[in-house]
Length: 210
Image (tube, rainbow, N blue to C red):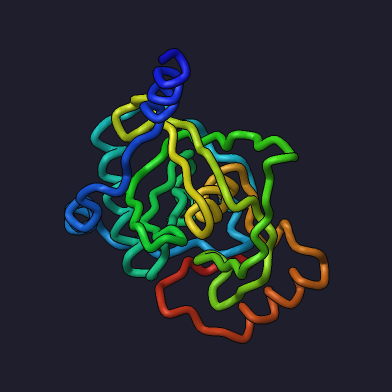
């Protein structure tokens, strides 16, 4: 019985982000305004963002804009600094490897450190709206837990596996000033940036100065 109670308590930590996904995403999107996407080289993408300290109407409006911008750019996750806002918040609308849709928002995210013995790497392709038209293989753990706060400031935890785990790690990285290409070898990074230079994004971006 004690073990069962412990398991139930652990399960209670995690939000259920699989319910009413279409309705919730659409409501955010319809309230929001699409903003252009910042690309690699933009200063906000290369430094740690500020913690969210006020869970107010302006944060709610930002989240709406982020969902609208994410959909317009056909992304599965978006961090605030990708639309030029210096705050630790990301949104996601992502399928996991079982085809289950997850929609949500995390403020002030922190990734759990996985024990080395339980870490299984997935080395699938990864891309980024802020490095448009480029992709590269990048090993990441195939399971992730992110802890933070929801839009009202309530503590939450989100867990994901496979592609969704990659999304959670990728977006958390953004808010600490790290792009996925920063995790590549020099040769792989150079190749990704070459792909970006030769491609044309299908969504509006913010031109970098200089």
